[in-house]
Image 1 (spheres, helix red, strand yellow):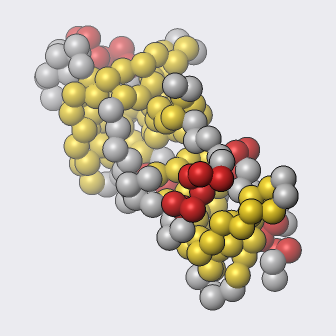
Image 2 (cartoon, one colour):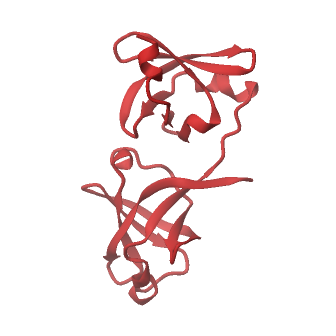
Length: 172
């Protein structure tokens, strides 16, 4: 499987308790939408290092408590304070077989700006288009291209996209 680690979950701000847990200040997009996680990558001395999660608990106020497998003391985990935490996600392969399942997904841009809900995936020669019913009841067409996808949260039925400037305005 191929993984991507370019989705920043947050930053470790401090240790939490004496049994090796840390507090992670979440990025704005994840404050009310914490993904299911089995593992994450920590940026340690400029390198991304994988860690398996033993405990994940939302603490409120935009923070989450994480405990990593094999780290059971404050001494072991203390060195990671200040480290950035990245999500590990399987790179989504775009093809005709899996796009119809996207109907009903909410689409966000700029991390937390809802633009609407996918009502149809249109297959054009050489390109797939997402037909999105906007929050203003307008139909918006956006190319469904892997370079525009930031993340796909299947359980939450959410797609976060980074689309080129002006693309939404074309649909006005």
